[in-house]
Length: 220
Length: 260
Image 1 (cartoon, chains in turn red, brown):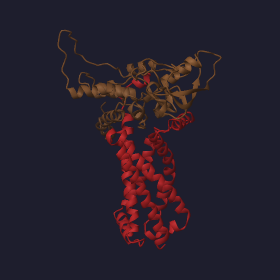
Image 2: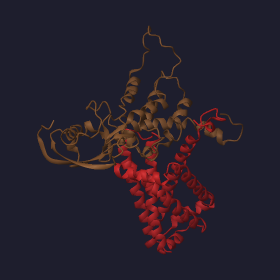
Image 3: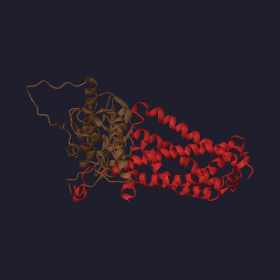
Image 4: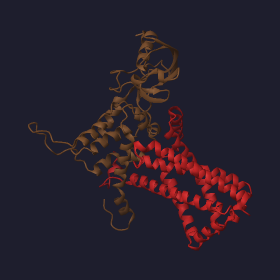
């Protein structure tokens, strides 16, 4: 043990425990937010793109300042989550090569799931920031405004990429929190993993339907 | 050894060869062909290759019954015990590599002993108690369910498969403790005779090389040849080590005088 590890140390160094706890807590908050977000945006499907329900919901979040304050808070939580989780990511070429070689040779499902999470993290970090900036700098949110963006074309491509990235990251993430922290036991792992897969596919399905509604049914 | 009913397949073995003791040796893959026989295991196959084709081939075996843990190797990319791996469950082309992370002795043989010795020293793998042993006294009683739970963790044969299957250990082979160490420490945590408190266990395992460095990929859980419930143990360990720090976290975040 190095001297600087022992100097002025009375109790154990708890930093790694704090960081791991915060990674998990911010992860759970973001998973809950993303699923709630998906369901609320999907409210545009309720009146076949009319946007009456969605506009009421959007107005509620703006009148209570939940969008104006909550939006940046979610952005901050996302950045914090990235920093906490990035502790585990290989940034050195030697480590990246090692984990890639291991993943290919071992060809093991949960190892691949982690690789997917690591890759989607960077895409979400960039695209998520772009999405939040665009939406939060042009409040209020209305169905017509969202439809105008999607019907422009490029934003449709943007969301067709971002949607599966988020849903994969979120779905795999909640499953992995479950097994890592022992909430999911060996006896239930298979069944809960299957459930998580279905949930992820359902969320992607809802997202695609919502994009279709914005593209075709909603008047921009 | 060459007897037995043939199964009609010719197996091709791609085997890693390298002798670090020999300056003339360079790492390479050698191919061997063998007629598959009934109930053939990799133990049988490798011994036949050594006896009939290449006496210099290095690999480890002792018990050939999945108990000693010395024949672990990478079989088509997955760590497993050669002695309980039947060739009939494998494709006709079989690639054998030594386990990563451990020091290479030669060809398929690695030194797991040094690694496990260091691990056992690091986790101080013995019962810590202030009680003096009295040989004249009857042993203390233990609840049977608890004894069985401890026994479940004691079944580790130190083969090293969990370490070879670990993404984290492959990334940082020098420091990461690995599932075998976590299993070991979890075994003492549930043993009422061990008087170490949570902070003392935390000191050993509550860091980046320990449970908080674990990525939770479950390579260990899915390859352990003894089927030790590693997923449940690692989850228990992370929860116990993590949640016990929540009160300290609040103290660290809240303003005021800090205590250790």
